[in-house]
Image 1: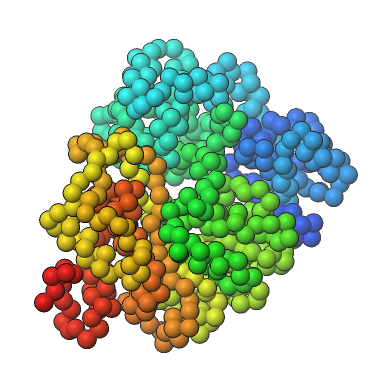
Image 2 (image 1 turned 30 degrees about the vertical axis):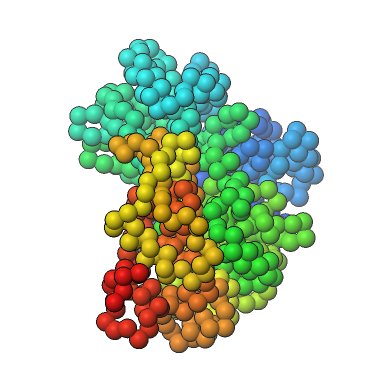
Length: 581
């Protein structure tokens, strides 16, 4: 006769109760019109937690878990309680914008546990779980170039003392901020450790340091990010925030085990990075006018495509801010929410309970006018998003394809009926980011040889000749040919292409066309392709030909362009325009 394992049964019952409570919290969040969060899988922001004293937090069953600028994310068990409402009012009067999230008891207990660490940090002179904002602001005043960062880091590495590592972290972060780096990479090798910054999309070596310093630095960063010190063979993700010059910069931490130690990447999320106006994105004026017309429609779908890091989300955020007004409701489903937008309901997916598909279904029950889905990854999300666009919603999303034409075959591959696609999708876009030439650190170069032939060929393929710059005889390049790019470039700008779903494109989609067929048909719309837009920016001195070649294959659409110009020519003529026989 089998024995009854009471402890095992009790464990299962406890797990069942916890799952039921999470489901209830999610359902009640919809009832009360607030967000839902599972804090067991999120990193708790210490700055947010400290706003409400532990005693008050436990009494009211609340906890602050994230803070970006003046926006406070507040976890609650009972949003309808008068005391909780009063707390929200008090925080609002203190200048905060409170976003309320429904959570389970287990989530709150995890947040409350962090008060112990805050208590220990307060007793630590260096602030074990905080980066000193004053120190960073002070350090920033000393850094005017990467050489300054290297010199200051060298000095710190030679110092001794208990607070040396804290200072090194502050210098590393301050150096990244002063050089406008988006990411900090700390990579252990066999004999030393390399520090690199990603500046304008390109990794730049800063310096190397010893393994002992790296070990202490790793522990410090793990503490800051709320990660486990004793886990060294698994990937970990965390976050912390820095308040500098009146703005909060979120820092996302990624730890990955490697052959010689754990690789560290810190991504700096500066709120000003997404405060880009549509006019500053780099969209050609004629195309921008068409896009403004499309996003002003009450329903339909706009899809933006491109590789990771090509600026898709920033562009969609700019569109959201453009269409936002007090008369409409906008909901986003993101992975993760990296930047917070005022007046917009932003939700974040998790790996277990709140996926893009379930989030989108829940969002539709909130009666939104505009929805942004961070990414269409599978048939379920694609189908739900398409249906939303067909039922009176304006939907923004992203898709991983190489160009705008590839969107339609990709949706068909995901199982969407071509006839439905043509009715739902208004416009598809593609974009890349290229570095902008520093206006004072560039030189004019006469266009000649192979470069001249390449540029002439691409210009000849532009349908609307009014988009071609007047001077096509010179281009601009970095002033110093040996320069790594850090000094000759400053900032980045987008190059774009778009396909408007007009009557011809709509009819073509229904035939399950290839990417090439859609590209050929789209040429008649007269909008620039990625390559053409890039060449126009090169001729205008915005970027260099070498930078454009780094991002795009200049011969990538030779056949398609030639076939569009000479549809009866077979085999395709590969000679440059202007020299065709």
